[in-house]
Length: 142
Length: 142
DNA sequence: TATAATAGTTGATATAAGCAACTATTAAGG
DNA sequence: CCTTAATAGTTGCTTATATCAACTATTATA
Image (cartoon, rainbow over all chains, first blue to last red):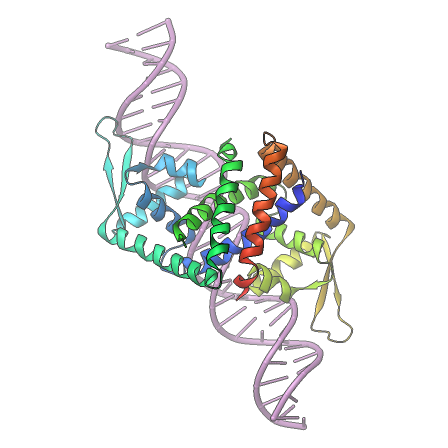
């Protein structure tokens, strides 16, 4: 197993994602904010605790971001009926449109990045990505 | 071309790299500092401008980090003989050992991450990574 | 030689993040 | 039940990280 190859890939892909995020989130919201919006957009009704675990954010920090996004009317909270400690998170209409905007910018950049890639290669690319996901899987959770 | 697959991979791999960095750099130095140390370790004699371009850091911010690392005796600077504006960057012995330490921690985590992967799969993994690098290439520079 | 461009530094400031103490609520053990 | 422990989230305080713009020194260009 050649670890060095993997590390090189990590450095390489870290740069791609870095550039990616730089452009994708050249919007009104920071990287963490955008990740939160995306995550709630994809998992409506999720809880803060989930975001803390999944995005590895400090719960205090997250709490503040969520308050800010609530004030901005990007999202709203609904207190759980069975357990009033828990609040479910949802995007507002405005939040949805920001979510779409983020998706739009991201897709646009991806299209730009991949515009010269042949049909053949793009199939190969997705195959490779799927392969990595399958092999590494979810072990990294631990 | 299914952009959504790629975006999913990006989210997936962003998490892996995030966790990765979190652990890898649970050392004395921050993520940016570690990236700088790594980069100088791999490209001894490189210039600040290169790091600014390559790592997309603010030149003022970078300047401060470099000063700090110089004070810590992690690196040293050599003024270019032909153009005294330019300073070449090198790791000191201490810097080298930190570089090795970063590599060590990173490798250790990678080994942990991949410990249950078969010989077959690890070959597949590296093939997939190589494939991605080849297909996407260096276009993202632009 | 005057002017523009480049490399890097510095000061001031904003943003992001982390820690620990706190409230409110729910779960669990005797 | 009732006390104690655990959980979800909030808040105050502090530090780390990053950005911007003005600045010096040096080199390239017209």
